[in-house]
Structures are given as structure tokens and as C-alpha cells.
Length: 304
Ligand SMILES: [Zn+2]
Image 1: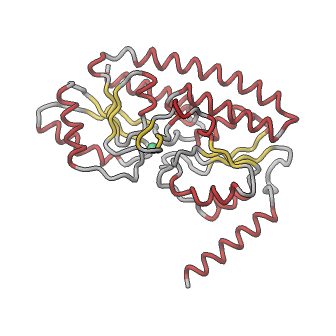
Image 2: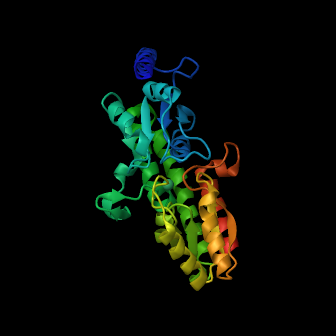
Image 3: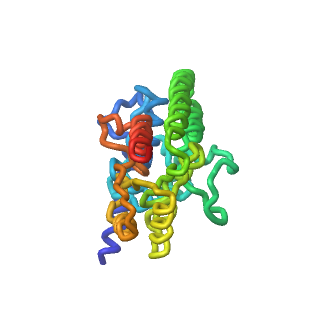
């Protein structure tokens, strides 16, 4: 019975949203863009400025691997004029709804424009979705967003292109800064241990070894062997800190800390990193650039 009621409600929501188009509360001259993650919303805002009204479905601390769209999220998706999502299965529980929406409106995966050879392969035709941690790849995603906005809203194309150019220059500076900061850490101790494997692109781009207890998705299981492997690495390379993530419970890393203690190697929590979600809106970490700066400073301080 419950199933039928849910179906009926979904139908009502769908019907209302299709009829309603843009919510009345919004400026009708602005393009209504809905994104999955906060990082993508931040990129759209940097390119679109006051010509777009952008909303992200996932706020601070939300894990995109486990996120399911609620009824009100569905309304937003149905009302959106353009939808941007990450793709490469980051939004694993949203693939059905995104596929359905693709049949009726512009829906873009920002990772679609990134050449396959630049993606991190983690299995047969499986690629690591966390591309935002290589700033040069994120720059490509921003370029793609500017291209889509320019196509869909041609009268403002030069406005979007100009802003995209300015923002991408900031990203290039951030990329150079990140590389130079990470290089300050002694090579042997340049190991980043986190709960899940979100920093693979970061490691590759900025030459730091990255080890995650879970795989590339927080929904993956981990076992005693994974814990032992990490403890061994920390002890042998004398790494002094591991990191928690804002969107993943910190409990996962406790077994690693305990294991190191038993081997008389003191390891501390080096701080909290923003991995799959940004910080609170209105704080520096609530922007993509601020989030990266926070992570880099935290890593360098703890490992140097
Ligand atoms: Zn992740």
C-alpha cells in the first residue's frame, strides 16, 4: 500500500513541477541551474555571476556516494533549466533519476569533457570520480560549464566567457601554489592517509602518496587487511598524521590509530579535510578555492 502512495505522490510532484516551470520566487530573467554537489554550484556561480540562479542539492558534510534525492530535490530538478552533475558514478544513487531527466531537459556530466587518458582508471571501465582534486582538471570542468551556459543563453555568451577566463586564471594560480606547498613536505613523509580514496587525483597531480582505507566510494567495505596495510606503511615511513574527512565518519580511522600505538608509533589526526563536500556557506571553505587552500594548509602543517 505504502508503495502505491509513494508512486502517487511522485506523480503529483512530477505533474506540478512540469506545469510550474521556474519557481515564482525567482528572477525570471536568470537562468535556473541545479547542481548535485556544492563544488559544481560554486563553479557555475563563478562563471554565471548574476545571470544565473544556482542551487546545489548537496550541502556541507553530505556524502555524494550515498545521497538520494528527496521529493523536494526532485521538484528542483524538474524545474531546473539546466542540470549539472559530476558523473563517473559519484552520484551512485541518483543515476536513474538523472537518466530520466536527460530525456526531457539539458543535463550535463561535467566530467564528460575530460579526455579519458586524464582520468584515473580504478578498474575495468571504472574511473575515479573525484576530479576536483586535480585543479587543472577542474579548470576543464569550468570551461565546459561556460560552454554550456553560453550555448543555452547565447545573449550572455561573452559575459560567461569573460568570467570563465578570469576564474580559470585564479585556478591556474591555485594549481601552482598547491604544487609548491606540497613540495615542502619531506619526500619520505609525503603520504596522505584518509578514510576513503578521494585524493587520488590530488596525489597524482601534486606528487604525494595517497592511501584510503575504503575504495573510491564510501559505500565500499574495508577489512582487517586494509587496516594492516596502512599501519605498516605509517610505521615504516614514520608518517606522523592521518586525516579525517568532513563528509565521512571519523570512526573508520580509529583502528589505524590503535594499531600504530600498539607498534609504538605515535600517529595523530592531522586535521579535517574537505573531500566530497565543501564547508559552510559564507565561510572561506564554503568555496572551491577556499576548500582547496584549507586542505593544502592542513596537510602541509601536519606532515612537514
Ligand atoms: Zn568520494
